[in-house]
Amino acid sequence: MSWLETYRRKRCSADEAVQHIRAGNTVYIHPGCAAPEQLVRAMVRRGPQLRDVKVIHLLTAGSADYAQPEMAQNFRHVAFFAGANVRRAINEGRADFIPIFLGEIEALFANGSVHVHVALIHVSLPDEHGFCSYGVGVDTTKTAAEHADIVIAQVNPKMPRSLGDSFIHLNKIDHLIEVEDDILEHPQGQISDIANKIGSNIAGLIEDGSTLQLGIGEIPDAVLHYLDTKKDLGIHTEMVSDGVVGLIERGVINNEKKTLHPGKVIVGFVLGTRRLYDFIDNNPIFEFHPSSYTNDPFIISRNDKQVAINS
Image (cartoon, rainbow, N blue to C red):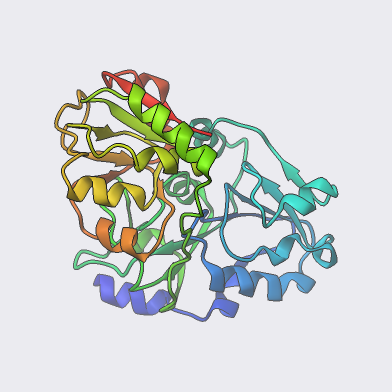
């Protein structure tokens, strides 16, 4: 059977796809800007027919109606990172927060500590060989899908085709829906005067040839504005935002001095806007990996002059 025949056979509607979620299941949702919104909304519509479904993810953008008070008997949300869309539910005791290092989450799926019954993922169109890309987020999703009983994919031509360890074959997808929705965006907010001053000071501590890790927040974003005079910077990080695009285009970030993966931006996921998504699409400078790789201390230690910037 050709991959196209496989694709057609597995195609269904979102409401049909979520019929495979059962009471008591654990459902993993592709996090960040890759959140598969149509599948999530269909799952919520099915909510009144379900009980005690555990919903797990890192940090999703978009809606989280499964965490609303009226869904408390249907869904129990478990967050490894507490985002704004579920923070109230956690504070009110209707959801759980599990503190854990990002690089250690995938081990929970692999060793069976967290049994993923259904993984809801968001991927690119398949290529000529039947491989779909995880697009803006490989993170913990690739491993979750590999260990899930059922994989349901939202296939979207607007999802960029990111390269690296970032693919899933149609044979590994059980059911798929087709969408043509804009990918969720995480635009950079206004940077305060204080953050700009901190960013300028931090930039002064970064030497030419350094390899950077960038976290989420105002401070890492501010630092990027003050790096134009630097030379031969590299990236090995769990995530990047729009701020790296201009630095790569201007040659400030070229990854040439990296002692591990020279010439490559090593990243697990991106949080940004369409400008960033278009930039990573089929761009060989970007090499996506699971978080268990990007955040492995042994791997990180192989980079000379590694600098971590967080807030």
